[in-house]
Length: 361
Image (cartoon, rainbow, N blue to C red; front, side, top):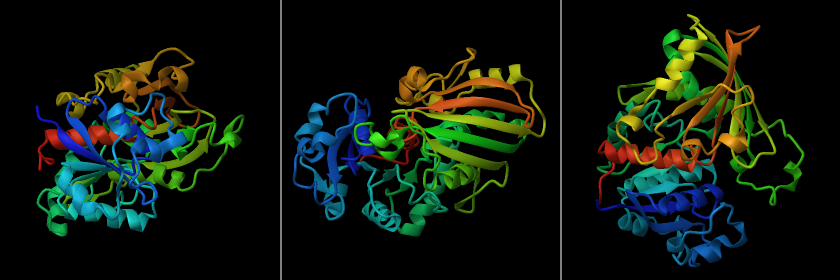
């Protein structure tokens, strides 16, 4: 098949770097443009990134000598060169909203890793295995913005992807109350241990805005499309506490849950093992064959051992047991820069292509 031409705006940051690596051998997508801030524009990508390259693998050969474009002033030109863009820019929220709308109005679909549009009512915030039907709202968004093929779609916050996928197949039992504590890797802040030595041998019990996102974003993911907007769910009640921990990659969540109708533990495990989402039905390139994997071992999942499961796209679950205050408690793990960030956005782009919302220009 002829590949979709892809741009990465915000390509020099950590998530942008991950997008670049994921494009290297993608069967559907081909990197055509890298764009970043004015200070990087005009340099080769290798020069622009310099010593800030944070991936485990080298800069892809194709990207090294690409000349970085200006993400803000070259919108029209970039839009003419690609079929869609991934957005990973580091700007103020109002600036991100304006920039992403500018690309969309130039009929360039935008798949965003940023939070700026997550609460725009006609912008779908999608985990492809959980709420793929939300992409239907794009037709109303296009009418509002006067677009034919442009669109904005976003992925959710990385922290909720460590536990919402495990809870989602259990909604038939009536999720009542959820308490979640997340233990989040430093790459979620765009850092390595070299660039953030204060995190070595340390835990920081605060991540700005993270607890609010962890409590509120599941309500949109579990909402419904109605009259051209996404109407948020009203249940379950979620309270969250988020901590930064000295782990390079991998967000862990300790989950406590109450149900309306309490399921047997064996049934919960069977549901997790058998669950398949739309991404698996469509056999999307980034979709893991096993979306949810339960570990019977008492000391799993572990970030270092299990974050790469399913090429970093599988959600790991373990330690399911009764609790004294809630019905059950268990532990989850997701790779925060793959499933939780760039990988999740790539899978979302694949879904939009497969469902006909992104077409070649």
